Image 1 (tube, rainbow, N blue to C red):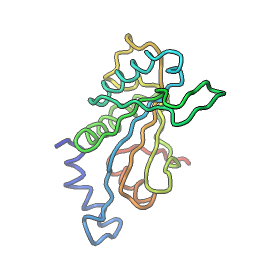
Image 2 (image 1 turned 90 degrees about the vertical axis):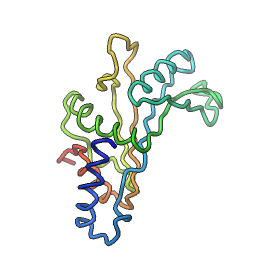
Image 3 (image 1 turned 60 degrees about the horizontal axis):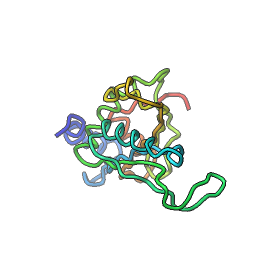
Image 4 (image 1 turned 90 degrees about the horizontal axis):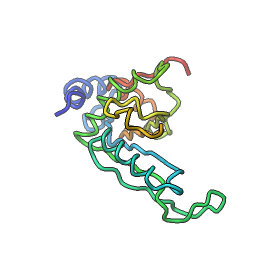
Amino acid sequence: MSRLHEKYKNEIVEELQKELSLENKMAVPKVVKVVINIGSGEALQNIKVLDSAKKELSLITGQWPAVGRAKKSISSFKLRKGNPIACYITLRGKRMYEFLDRFFNIVLPRVRDFRGVPMRSFDGRGNYTLGLKDQLVFPEIDYTKVEKSRGMNITIVTSARTDEMSRILLKKLGMPFSEAL
């Protein structure tokens, strides 16, 4: 069991149950999955861009990503339905907790001019989405082998019913929120 998962089971569940005044332990919010997405519009001209993005994403997460394809054609972007334009990974269970532990404690502090993640990035249903501008903040990436800097979206899906419950859960797990709105 990963360090963060052990901390969640042994300490955070009881704290959240008291803080949120929940009677049942099963009603305590938890992290369900983490989805990491790298979109690459350049993949229309050069498919190798998507291959290198898949390689880097697999180094970061420890599992091979799936390819996202265009759902419909858009002529102004020269995009056809079914063209590969992104790669994504859904993490659950042990890998999810290991990724979140590394993300909160190692990766986020390495972001330049980091003062905490914004609190306004919740979607209204308890899920949190964060965008990174550069993949080089991950220690697994060798910056000498990177052709181009790419951004990624990281979505943390929780079982919380409200944004406030989710914010409390993520704060207890170690997510560094910024104090300013």
